[in-house]
Image (cartoon, rainbow, N blue to C red):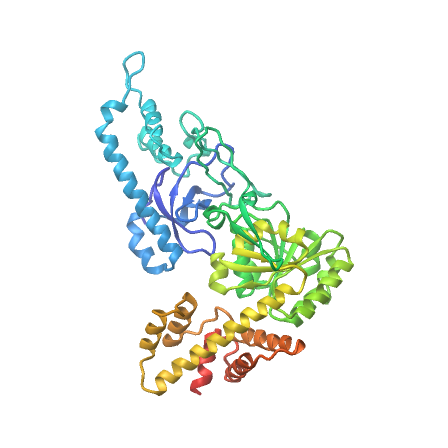
Length: 517
């Protein structure tokens, strides 16, 4: 296969870990950032996310020759936005090139000996509001298109001409032990030399009348990956559908993470991405400042804390434990009490979403318990979710999450019932879906679940057995306060029938099969 030579300014497709190939541009790294040892790689800025990363050469492909191929295999709104950003960049670059060509004679200056000085021309171009990446592109031209392949021993060969660019500042947050990912926020200001303020100080804290608090990004940079990772050591227990995506995003955003899973083989992929392996839950908790757990049900959550070599054995004063499992409030209260009795700090933080939203870092986090732990988890929550809510004392988040999943589970059962009734009465199921998606109930959830049903695709995005568990716990919670839940009870019976038809490990949309058997 022919060797592809890459250099600063080239548009590429870059692949990082589990994530699909993403459009980016090779840029010059900050002067004080060393290239990872033993890796042939380039520093890439990704479009649409503003992430920056060292990417191995074998994980890079030129943008234009592979554009159609990548568009065919990658879908999703965020991916399309990234491709659109590339096209917008190309459009602007073409316009600047045309303007530059028409002004060449004005831009080229001479030094005292009358020789042309293209470096000054670059400076003049920069005075016309070009960004740092544009300067990198001009520098490549000045270097007579020298191929900046990985034979260059140090990134010093691609440093900017004339030092730093006025109005810009790179902010480096290296993680210990030379991790493969580094993060920066490139900020432009009217005043030269402006510095970047921590992303955690640019959040909107929304206080609700009910006492809940929402932390949301003040602008798109917090969502798009410019996150300052905490220097605290993070532990994570449980690498299921939700936990796997969460851990990947924590690693991607530069956190130091130690992982444990009951089935140890599931840890291998994350070790390759830079995580460390914990032998037991107790070891993870003892080695980390904040430990998250995300398991299937109340029994698994209790066993993880109270069982042999469990969390409780590793808890010491000041250690933080964050329970992300969707479980009942009584179990949350019990776990909170045993953790705090050992001097630990406790927070519950169940998440609303699916495997896809977990992978995309777009979960909604509901938190309750120790407010200071919630604040310490700020960068983690930004990495894994689009927003988070603090709901007060421990147990409140569990209650809210069960109510949300009760509504979602009941809705899914009703949609499945509508699809089968349409078929039974001779109506087109696709037309039924098309009408729904044009009305007030239109949503991504509705469209995706129905399309999967019509295609017979029940690959789990949220396990059917878990939504049935959530319905069961919500009904029990209603009983505890003498509140009727007849709709949830009816939906629960349909899911129980689906489980009897061996649909437990399929997606929740497989409840459809309970109506056709």
